[in-house]
Image (cartoon, rainbow, N blue to C red; front, side, top):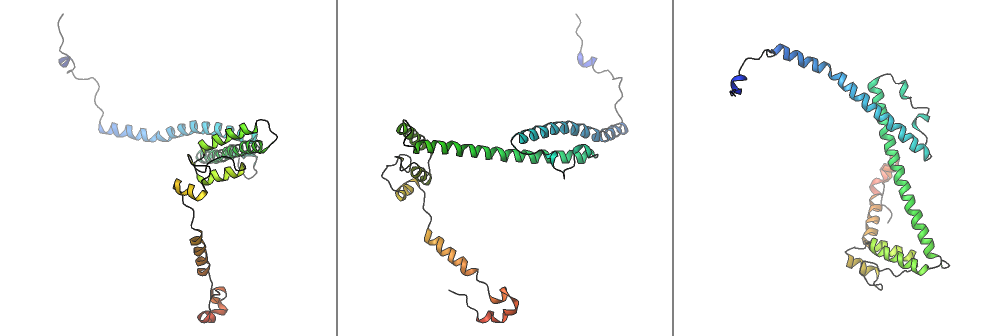
Length: 228
């Protein structure tokens, strides 16, 4: 079988003529002219997705007691916005607003749930008539000892549980006082004396002269002394 030199075979001239500079420029102009159509197509697909998301958010918020955005009289329905670009911008803004409202609502529900669970457990532990109360309290103290690190938080929890046997810091002694526990944990109590002095200094700086209160009394500024 005779071998064929591929380089020689591919060296023949192509029947297709290369594009001229004018043809290339024309192709670029057509591509640029169709860019608006491509953007419109992408916007339509995004608009469909945003519309679906808007309906989902409205339904979810309505189920949780919030009214949908279309129930507000001052809001123009999307169907009445004729300009495509404006309608897309309004739709996107409404979805973003409802997304933020949904996130806030979920955080509130989560916080409320935590408060309810904590309150129920605290009430159960404080009820002396509950069966196996000591076992429940021991279990709570064990959980708190593993989950709570800050000395101030441990002190608050221990007081709520009626001086439960919870050390003020992980691995600490039950008889350890708050100041020692704070020092051992690297936490520092605020300097209340410095805070009081700073507050008094701010009050002195806030003293107004008679002229600042009423321009008619500006002649008294030179002899005015703030009360001590």
